[in-house]
Image (cartoon, rainbow, N blue to C red; front, side, top):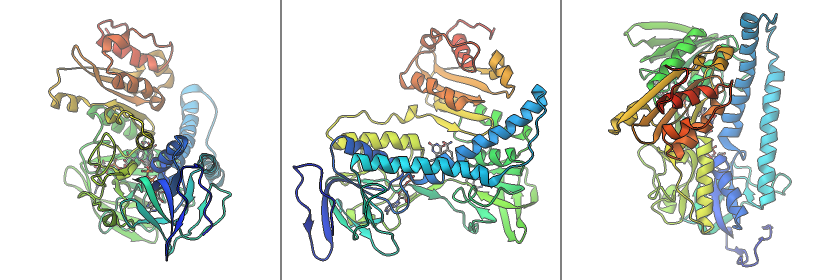
Length: 504
Ligand SMILES: Cc1cc2nc3c(=O)[nH]c(=O)nc-3n(C[C@H](O)[C@H](O)[C@H](O)COP(=O)(O)OP(=O)(O)OC[C@H]3O[C@@H](n4cnc5c(N)ncnc54)[C@H](O)[C@@H]3O)c2cc1C
Ligand SMILES: NC(=O)c1ccc[n+]([C@@H]2O[C@H](COP(=O)([O-])OP(=O)(O)OC[C@H]3O[C@@H](n4cnc5c(N)ncnc54)[C@H](O)[C@@H]3O)[C@@H](O)[C@H]2O)c1
């Protein structure tokens, strides 16, 4: 095997063992999604030699099937909605003549491809050795490339040459970052055409004229919103009694109202009791919260009922590891994201809650683990201050505790909410929305909850407020620019700080 030379002089030479050649490295990372590649990049930047196994494409779910393609298309959806607003509110004589699907998906795919090339180039520049194969554990620090069915190659970035199937031993640590895949329900088998998941919903040749979206979490809400903007009839079915059941109840209420106003049929507390695929679509039966059975004919059924961790083919047992009852690999030490097997760390969607299954959390986890492995003392990830955003129309964005969670913890809670339209810029946008702040009386702000246009960009302020344990009166000292939507946040804090301006 032609092994790429090591970068550090102190590194022992590669050894060859019969029958499998074994290379030595400081850190092995399995999985090149946002969790894995961020670990690899930071560890390499800190001088560690890193081997990264990826069996598909670096960038993982977020770049190729998740955050980026979906947000690209949601941006296009916003433009479509903007045409309607221009016509209906502003007298602009505009209409949507149609969607050039090839152009739309071409722009999306170009954004994904450019990002992908960027990640490849970063890894190459950092000197991370990428093994393009499925990894299987052979011990707590040893990994082999699975030859069967895998396109096995080892490169230093996009221009690297193919190599033999390698095996590696990590001197310092093994990092598991194998991510997640869509959770499936018994009897609802995706065929990529009539019954789909987020893996294929946006990659079919066009969007359907009607869709039943099963699951009102982030994916369900975003995809329902997207399909509706593009003109589809959308039925959104959520088993819990509200959309985004993990968010503040006021966020769910505002969101459901706004989606209904846009023509989405929102059914909460509802269950899919039957689904039959036909030539022209899917015949679905939904039992509503009132116990009625709705017989629905739709072109497509999109299953968005959560995600499940990926560990297949890894052979965790070989490293002395097991999954929890839900398939996650839990850390024994959350501050170090280290399992009960010393030197084996986990990042990203493979972690159970409170890790939230979000790309930006996986970046933070990757940085943390890399810095620990390089001998640093990074602060643990503050999961309570990780923002959560839904890029639907309207958007939702939140950080910290919901009102219910704050009260359940026995805090002496004060709450103030105000509509986004209480400020002039909110009226300009004309999309409604709200700001809600949950704080401890005479104590820190516990949660900030936003619904409305652009709130994905506005939550950064809330994350500093919650992350830094700021008090409402302190925040109220800070002047917000006028006229902006962020003024609604400023005004909410003015009220909570006892200095209400327009909210009297
Ligand atoms: C539709 C959708 C939209 C989303 N939107 C957002 C969003 O807007 N914002 C946000 O923060 N999050 C979003 N997410 C969540 C985000 O995508 C995930 O939290 C993130 O991708 C998790 O990263 P990861 O590195 O843990 O796993 P993944 O990205 O899943 O990467 C794991 C990688 O490991 C590889 N792998 C697995 N097993 C092996 C093996 N044995 N050997 C070698 N390689 C292996 C896989 O091929 C994969 O590339 C979205 C998810 C979806 C599905
Ligand atoms: N904007 C973002 O940050 C973003 C966008 C998309 C996905 N993600 C992440 O991806 C992951 C997966 O998202 P998701 O929306 O699939 O999962 P989720 O767990 O957030 O939501 C799934 C929803 O489906 C509902 N559900 C479960 N079983 C059901 C059934 N049989 N019938 C009807 N409803 C049912 C649940 O009550 C829940 O509300 C999450 O971690 C999410 O945070 C994030």
